[in-house]
Length: 98
Image 1 (tube, one colour):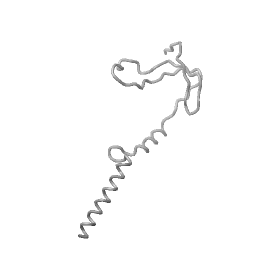
Image 2: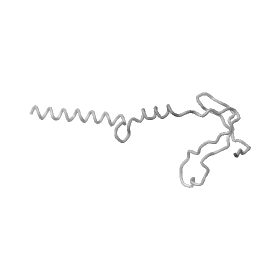
Image 3: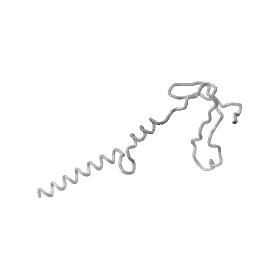
Image 4: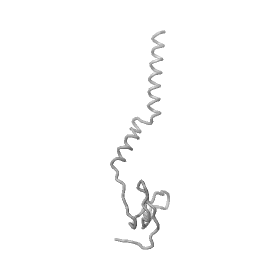
């Protein structure tokens, strides 16, 4: 009887540990998402634009009928530089092609 109880308790402890690992979202299918995101963001450099620069904005909408549409909107002109790599832009009247 004592061995049976110990066996049940050890199985319960294993189940608890497995459930904790599942709750974290880490494991074989989803390996360390927070750490990967942090390391990826360390390597990314933000673009720095000045007032008067022309920029294009990438299309983020996906759906049917968008395959032949342009991948970027623009040109836009930077009119104000804000903190934390944010910008105010306005639609440019002139098209700038190189």
